[in-house]
Length: 333
Image 1 (cartoon, rainbow, N blue to C red):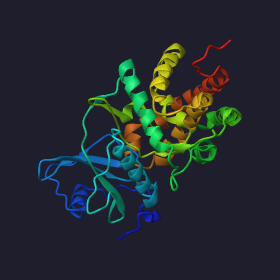
Image 2 (cartoon, one colour):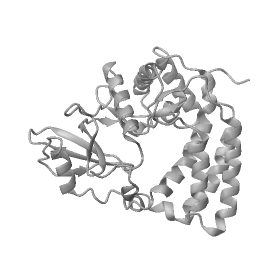
Image 3 (cartoon, helix red, strand yellow):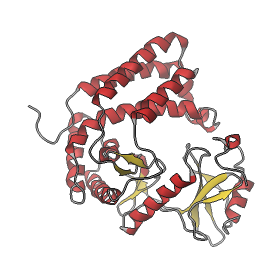
Image 4 (cartoon, rainbow, N blue to C red):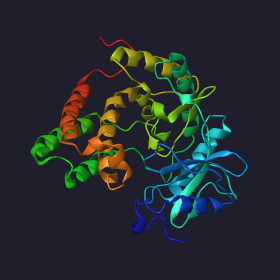
């Protein structure tokens, strides 16, 4: 069997033909009777199918060389811990005593297909439910940190991305000077505003509205970015709109959250720094994955000069946002 960490198949999904996936599933005793329908996923490859018993499943093939076996299994264990506390998450299926499987160099996992509506960010009742469950998730998270998964850091989210962008050929030559000058100013401001809270916990890691389905309540999906970090990382992406709207949403989320977990309000100072980190990390993520044929199709604007011009403006706006008063539930005098 090929080593999933071998450089020969690094980031390579070329081998995932329908026949290959069918045989991979058959290797764990699962027979796909329907065609494999590709779902919206770029970091990994995710397909829905119906088996011979007419049950609907989703199979997820992990991007080679992104996570180690230990890191993937740690995510699976975290999901299982949440499930045992009746927290609505989508766990990998246990087959032959394992949740993670290998086939000719690829790691993959099987999940029961869960449907649901989109979480409505402007529905305050739904926002309250999500806040309550985030408090419950973090109550579990606090028990112990991840041992194998990374911790949110300036190195991973700023310094490495900056180096990758510097070495890439995406930024138009006429824009390079202003782009990196403003990027370095943003990095300098992020360094000034960044601090490590007293407590770092296990996080969902990418808890934006698209990763919350609505059934009889919220269903949290896609813990692929789970890592250690400040609790506020799992909350700030739920906020949207103008400042007054964000304050109202934050009030609802934290009141519900606090029924189950204590929230250190000092972490609110990290909202804009975390937004800045995500901005820089996202650009580098696209650049790093550009050789994957799915990316130019899905993100054609990334290779356009106009996009990079807009990023220079976005850097300036984020620097300005870092200077504004922190979102707070107490009046600012």
